Image (cartoon, rainbow, N blue to C red; front, side, top):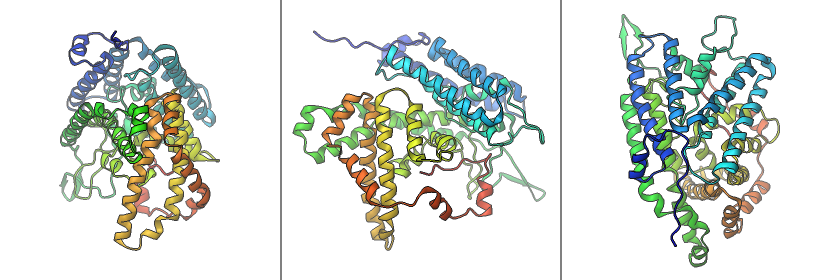
Length: 495
């Protein structure tokens, strides 16, 4: 007797149920995509008709917040109230506690509330369901809450402060930052200062090779660059990514890596190739979601990051990935630096730069907690610790021997590309399989070879302690340091 596939329940609107049945996709995913497309159209309207030169920041805050909460209600129903509860609790903490400890309390409460929701969703409601669940937006809100708390703790003056006057953001400003329609469903995380600058029309971003659109009486005249070309480019990337995912993903299911017949009858080299292809085809869905989210923000006028040396505008202020750098990464660090970029910045700010002992391990563990309650997440990030340590040891000890000639460097890059891609695929399999049993079956089929090899490399090859590496790091020139101002630029992730 055939087994009927049960579709996951959707707590959001059922208005698009007929479309969901026609295209044979879960309703919650249809709601998500339609809301994002509607947000894209709304973003153009927001930039053109609610431009800072035409209306007040108050109106822009109100419209952005109300639209964001409407989209959340449409996608998640009453579960969207969790967004308000989480934001409200942490806002109360910011108001009632002192600056000295508020960042710690906000991190514990925001992450604890997120973890509670993730655990109940996984183990009470729909374990193993891949769906547009309400904890996804809460992950981004958690980043925003804690980023703001750490900024205030670190004594960074928010750009709208009066001189020598520190005050908390108003409740409207706070909810607008956390729940605006541009980022409520898929982010990305942004600096609070950058968001307020966008709302008020006073962007603080300027590249060191600043170019302008015109001059008046010998003086530069700043005008707003149009994001239209960049939005079209990113939408084309979204379309291509979606087509690749829909057409290829089912051809290379990840679950086949643990199929008994496949393991028994396939040579190991073919298993390695299949592992790479199966994990490669899972990435386009992330490319689609994150690039679309970036395009929505750009369409609203958010994301401008100064000008390139040729005068072309940069719209990568809050971009979450660099696809070519991911696919051709020849080191574990290079892959991580270009994947989920804003989360990497957040992890660096709240954990890596502050943890006095084993910051790499602490950062991976925090990342696992933030991602959710599936055991596969923890297996992935615990594996990531040893892979990172091994990759760092290899780079510090082996790479210098291949820099003598271009041919040697090319050989090194080719070998490390292959090693990096296999290590990434091996590490991420549990993230996709989710459960302990299937994940351990995969690792056993590989005889834990990558784990064992990475541990041996990390132990055998010496790497200087982090504080010594930082002392030896070159000091930024004055020009570079001004272009990476604490409020107007984010540092790249260093691991």
